[in-house]
Amino acid sequence: MPSPVSAAFRSRETTWWIVAAAVVLADHATKWLASEVLASGDPVVVTPFFNFVLAYNTGAAFSFLAESSGWQRWLFAGIAVVAAALISVLIRRHAEQRLFCAGLALILGGAIGNLIDRLARGHVIDFLQLHAGEWYWPAFNVADSAITVGAVLVVLDSLRSRPGQGLQ
Image 1 (cartoon, helix red, strand yellow):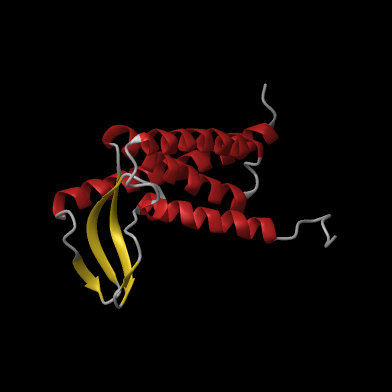
Image 2 (tube, rainbow, N blue to C red):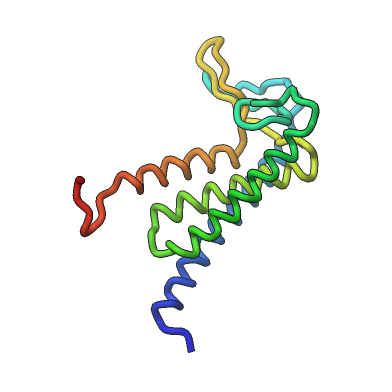
């Protein structure tokens, strides 16, 4: 019979899988919507600093290696699979650490969201674009946003002091 402590950890662990799944669902719902209502490369101005613009990214963040001959699809897919496996292990081992696991769950959901695009389409659908005057940030999506917020949470968690830890 499982102990109450292990049941509590499983419950917390389940929370993180739900967060990751919610990111994947939100990512793909918004990518589908963007694909249905936006024309590729034709920006829709929302505010003076934010546009919707449909873009297809065969590279990584900021279109890194997008001009390569196609091998990058499999490299980035492999990296996402390894990252997802590692993150899954970390979530299982540290389910009680809320900030850390919240960050990991966001990263996991984002990685899986973009992985599905890479495997199914050979590219990632991006549709959010920030800009300042004539300086445009590369288009991104919900998965990219989740990965970024997740990374910030993991860093913040690493900077927190914990009982029994002091500056050394």
